[in-house]
Image (cartoon, rainbow, N blue to C red; front, side, top):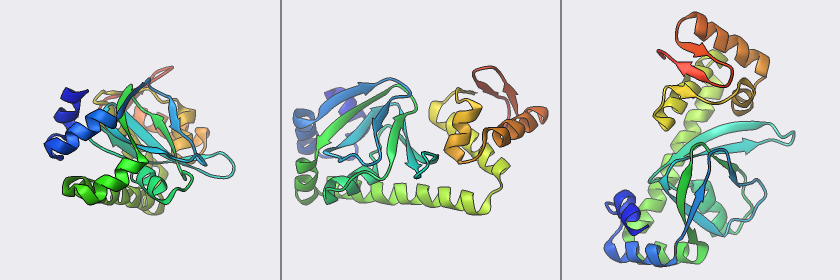
Length: 210
């Protein structure tokens, strides 16, 4: 863990803080598609991503979901930070997009390090800012983009996260995350295929030229 920690966070944190993280952090690994946080759950620790990616989703009263943003290696979740520091229940759910490895930091240390280490304080503030800008982008896309434009952005984001030209999401999963119907998504995907931008397969979507 020490080597991976230095690789992804060594440029951010001083050596003393890295040593503390190594001593008290709990290393966890999750397969792709695992829900690691649920709406209404109390959060007792925050994640530092070493590998993989996590998607953060908002769920309404009917169980429908909306994709807010992705977390990648070197990131943490601002919503988690907020819940931890305020001892509040989570307002979002988190699901691994890829096989994921992370370090969990106890809430007590989060508060202690905010006053003790300037690098940690800067990291927390920058994380808040980064996630806020991503949520504003999501809001803008809902407010100003047509569904076909939102779908195109969704596929581009998936490719950027996975570093692959294959999207393994089903039409129904995409519909859930974009908060629309499967019929609409299937129609728009077929349109993209006819335009030569994607190739539809039974269990995945091949990206050709977005």
